[in-house]
Length: 263
Image (cartoon, rainbow, N blue to C red; front, side):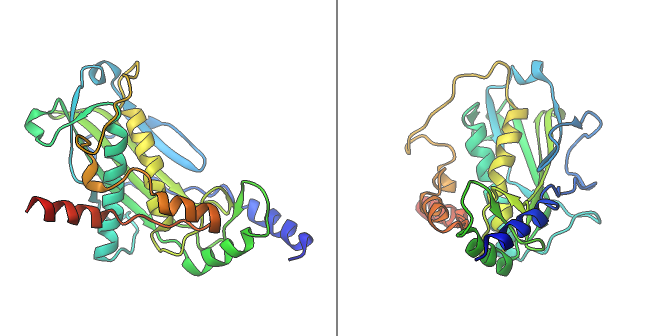
């Protein structure tokens, strides 16, 4: 492929590389008045945290992530796709918060409870992603190209509550960039699923006490998030590095297996 053509394409795509996902008006949060602008750029957030209250939290109960509905939400998710996205968001919240707090299975035993929701979803264009993966093979360096029109995204929110009092909250949105490190995917859910992890990172950051406690570690015998499967998608990680294509993890299979074992 001619280098001149690649250079021209990179220049054109860089003009649209800073597109950002919208923060929707629809919200499941108990309060939004305290939210202040946080990150801007490829990830956009609004955040609130009560450090004094957070420092008193030790045990956390995680409610299932739900899909927010309303006139300003935008998504086209089938039932099985909805379950995959919600489960991935819920899993990433569990993975991150479990490093900071004791995750309990009974809400009555918790000091605080986490509520979360997906508020916006943009599908990944699979045909354009395939073309981008092929093109990236010829381009050296850490940055890859994505085809405009194939850029998926995710918006989500979460809050930590003590009783009826909100002690931390984050509203979060991110869309794939035409030029950057977001891997293309042959799944309509590719971008939304890979963005669930940075959402979990930011939500846990906002919900963390200060200073941070020692990081909690677990084994397969005491991991409170084991029902979601492994924290690292090892097969997908290797394939991403080899092919440049993001391979999502289906965590619903792990959860179905857990239910079967319990029954």
